Length: 146
Image (cartoon, rainbow, N blue to C red):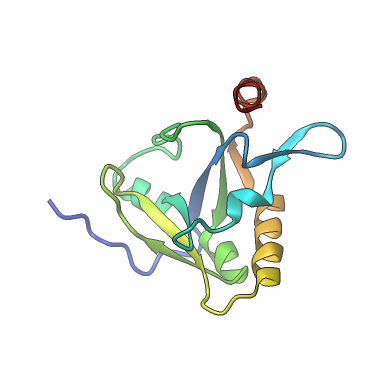
């Protein structure tokens, strides 16, 4: 059965980003772990993968129902769709095989490196924690990749 594409997404609902160690986690000045701006930089295809609260709600699923679904997952954070849009990104429902709740965040064509850097930093600094950083798992994964 084909998945119904949700368009447009409701601005007051959330995008959910799985944080993966070690690349999405940084050490703060006080020694605690924080979400790195790298978690919100686009991949090779120009997108940032997220799950969409709106799709999960329609399927009667909890926010955390897909967490952890990726390797090296150590936290789950969110932003309101309207917040993502205010940073200059689009948010779209793009189901993929095995995840009908998948969405993509994309910077507008022509966004400068500086705009992407600033927005990525703002998103990292202003995300809402759904599942806190698993410090022990971050340390374990860092020891493997060191």
